[in-house]
Length: 345
Ligand code: MG
Image (cartoon, rainbow, N blue to C red; front, side):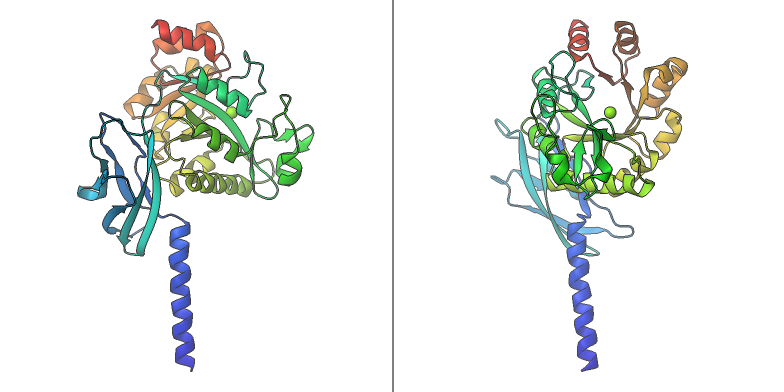
C-alpha cells in the first residue's frame, strides 16, 4: 500500500515536472528569422543547465519546407514566394524528456534604416505617445523600429505607458480592470502589451523595441515584469519581432538568462562596451550626451560585436554626427526628419 502511494507520488511529480518543462518552454531557437539569402533559421537549443538535446524533428509545417541539420540547426528550403512567416513545430528529445514547442519564424524583411520612433511616431502625427496609433504611423512611414514603454499592473498585466502613472493613477498599484477603462486623448484605451504585439505582428518591416521600466515599488516587481513580458512574447510567438531595452541592468540580465536568444540593450549609460559584452548584451542604447563624452565607445562597442543605439536624438546636428559615426540605430521623436536624412545618404 505504502509502496503504491510512493510510486504514485513519484509518477505525479514526473508529470508535474514534464508539464513545467513545457510551460517554461525550455527549448528555443538561437534566431527566429530567415530570408532569401539566409536559409538557416537558427539552432534549436535547450535552456536548462546540464541538459542536452539528443535529437529533434519538425512537424506540422507546410510542404516539407523545413529540415533540421547538424547541431540541431533549423533551416528552410528554397521556395518561390516565401510567406512572411511560418509556424514550425519542433519535437526535441532531451535529458529532461520530450519537449514540443511551436515557433513562428519570420521572413526577415525588416527595414534597415536605423530609424527608431521613440514611443511611436506621435509628435508630427498628432497621436498620443505610446498609442497603437503611434505604432501604426511608425510602421506606415517605414521605421526600422518603434519603441514603447511597459509597466506591470497590480494584477500582473502589462500596460504601455511612459510614466509610472497615467491620469494620476499609479499603474503598478492599480488593477487591469480600472486601467483598461482609461482612454488616451485619441479615444484609444490604454494599450496592453498584447495590443502592441497584435498590431506589430501584422507586418514584418518594423521591429518592436520593448522598454521594460524599472519598478517604482520593488526590485522584485521589475523582475516579475520581465518574466511576464517574456511569457506574453513567447505565447504570441513574437520572438522574431521584439527587441528589449531597460535602464535596470538586473532586468536586462534576467531577460538574457531566461531567453538567451533575446536581443537586449542597456540604457543607463555608465557601463563600458566590454562590461556589456561580457554579460552577453546585444548592444548599448545610451543618451547622445554619453556618447559625446565617450565617442570611442561607438568603435569599442562594434569591436565587441555590440550594436549602438542612441536616444533621444531630435536635433539635426546630433543626427548628422551619429550617422557619420555609423551608429546602428537612432531613437528619435522626429522620425520623419531622420528618414529624410537616411534616404539622402
Ligand atoms: Mg522609452
